[in-house]
Every structure is written in structure tokens, then in C-alpha cells.
Image (cartoon, rainbow, N blue to C red):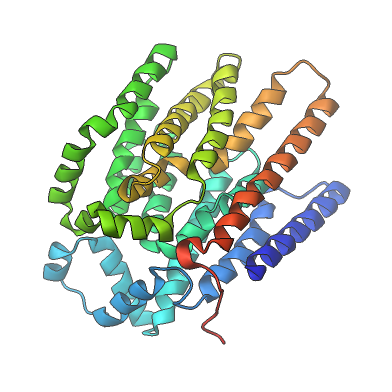
Length: 372
């Protein structure tokens, strides 16, 4: 655990130096804060051994077994053809099992940096939250799904600019990496709706009644993607949740709900340019909260929820900053209150992160490197 905490301290120190220099020189763009994030947490992810992350060893075994051999028949029968093609290309670069760990980590960290750069109102806070809300540690475990997640949300950055065709290209790519990315079509639908109170209420009802129809939906999903049948097994599911679980998930979901309430309260008072984006974010986080409360111990639904809950790293600073922007106070006070609130929130998120690390969630401790 110590290496992750030291990484946090190093990242904060590097960000503080950048901030200090920026105040003096007044020339530092905000995206520069992503450089220490990429260097620190990217290095840890890329240099970890196959024993860090429950599923990491499985990825290396599949990578070695493939031997870089790929053909049209193999791709046609593959459950994740784009990932298999990518793995074969990586194998030709270097056949060492550690190579796939390096490339997977590079794609995830770079992709997250790109998403934060395009979407976040505070890149330092968003990158911090990616780690403290445990998304980073999940990515060390279920790397293939996180590659799909990153690809999907890069596509959503284009969707926010109403570039639908580009979004669907990324959406298709994500689905060819991991089957669960099919839920991205629901995020697309959420973006296209003009939200109001009644529509939010209808969305809440629809998501809330999922337990009634979930058995039929899961059966349909399993028929289409039979490789996920083991997630519905009760015995395996309980064990898998213990490995992948998110600690006190109900409390974390309630924490998310607090920001959702603020998001609803400020939505009507935002500018025209901002209100559509925040309304869409509110819908996504509403789905996140309801899924988190109802399916807190369902492994497959937890996997699906990641595609929605990842938005929290963007949503939290967005809501806090906009809340104080519309407040009637001086600019200096607004800035001070924003910084203080963000600092308090970041400190709070460290508590469940440390708890989950202590409990061994995702199998990321003890840390070891293939360089040792």
C-alpha cells in the first residue's frame, strides 16, 4: 500500500511545484498537471508485475498463448476481435508477457488523460479522483474492460460536440474490445434527451424497476455473450465481488448522490452553454446512483455501472465549481470557497480508497514489479 500513498504524495508535490511556478510565470496551461499524473501513476501501472491485479496474470497467459498468430478466421470467431488483433501486434513488438501489461496500462492512462483534458473543469482534481475513487486500481485488475471504457468515453467527448458518426466509430471499437461496452448506446440516448424534472423521474423509475426485468435481460445478454455466464453463478459471484468489490459501496453511492442533488439544484441557473452538458451529466449520475443502490452486490451490473460512474471524476469538480459560480459573492471569495471545498472532498475520498486497499480489493497489494 505504501507505494500508492507515496505516489500520491509525489504527485501532489509535483502539482504544487507546477502551480507555484505557474503563479510566478503565469504561463502554465492547466493540462500540464496531467504530466505528473501520467508519469507517476502510469509508471506504477506499466511496471507492475503480473501478480498485481487479480486478472493480470490471466491477460499475460492469454497473450503468451496467442503467440502473435492471428488470421481472419480467428478474428471472426473471437469474443473480442479488436483486442485480439491489438494483442497480436503487441506480441510482434515484444513477446515478453510484461509487454501486454505495459501497453494496456499506457492506453488506459493516456486515454484517461485525454478524457480529462477534454472534459474536466479542473484536471488536477479529476486525475486525483480517478485514483482516490478507486477507478485506477480497478484498471490494474480488469484492464481489457477499462480499455473499452476509455475508448467509449473518448467517443463521448466527440458526442458532446454533436459528432455522432465519430462517436459510433469509437463505440464500435469499444464493443470489439469488451462486450459490456454495448451499454454505451444508453449513454448516447441519455445525451440526446432534453432533460426536465418529469424525464428525470421517468428515468429513475425505469432504472429502479430493473430488478423486476433483470433476470430476463441477463438471460438475453448471456445468450448473446455466453462468456459472461459465470458472472451469474451465485458462488462465483460472491467470490468475485469480494475480489472486485468496492468496499462500502452503499456509502460511496450516497456520497455520489450528494453531488447529484447539487447538480439538480443548480441546473436551471446555469448558462445555456453549460446547462445541456450538466443536464446530461445529471442523467448519467442518476443512473449511477440507482444502479449502485440496487445492484451493490451484483458483479455483472457492477461491471456495467463502471461505464456510468467513471463520469464522477468529471462531475464532482463540475458541480462544485458551477455551484459557487452562480453564488452571489465576490470573485475572490468564490475562488477561495471552490478551492477549500475541492480540497475537503479530495481528502474525504482518500478514506474509502485506503480502506479498499487495506481490504485487498482488486488484488493490487502487495505491489511488485517485473523489474525486481
